[in-house]
Length: 332
Image (cartoon, rainbow, N blue to C red; front, side):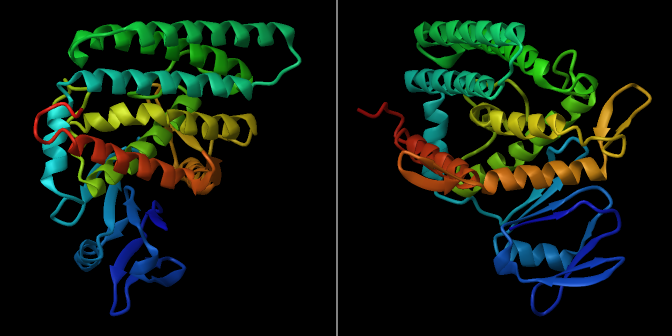
């Protein structure tokens, strides 16, 4: 269970039996064994005793900012595995295998975007034609990426980023047609969001960033050694690479929320600069919707697992892939 503290004034402490949540309504005890992570937003409090209990039980504590991204993380003073994985990870980034890996990541991202188009059922002939045209254009970008090659990722990085960006622009322009008129976006805006749908997307991606980064630490991977995203100083750039495989999960959840037409001005606020930010109600709805979606079990290759488990197992497999490069040589 992920314990989320995003109500102003809520406090997490501990007693002899475990964690204690204190709110205006009273106290509620939670055993540590039932918690996998603790997420704390602005206005919530946690005691040092509760922090130490979380560290002792290897429960990650994530401090989340207004955008949904983690601004701080407390974890036990050890990685989840041996340093051989991180040595191999660094070696991997300078191999041709890294070129093939990041190409497959972007191709899978575009596959996911095309799959989203299949959900856009409509009797409007013009909209159907737009979807089909967009699907074909994305297919062209997939073909270009498959034929793109270089000795290391730096050789193709600029071209790959450009094609990925163009594919995403086509995707969001098409998806936008199926969002209620009042919630449609003019363009993707990240820092900050300039409309409510972008605010939901940004916060959802922030939640996913946090889950991926935490899974990497547990698996023994260094989130700060990226493959395609390698130039940003002091940022978890490998998270930015891997999240491309799973962004569509957030897109789908946000699309469903907007399509239900349940969003009111209680969900968000607008700042003086025109930027949009989710408020408590909006965050709660999105967090619950994301958690429900990640907990949903689906069957892939004959095995039924939750989406959250699939993500974690992918990162564990990635750790093992990195480990094979620990001697600096390309595996045969």
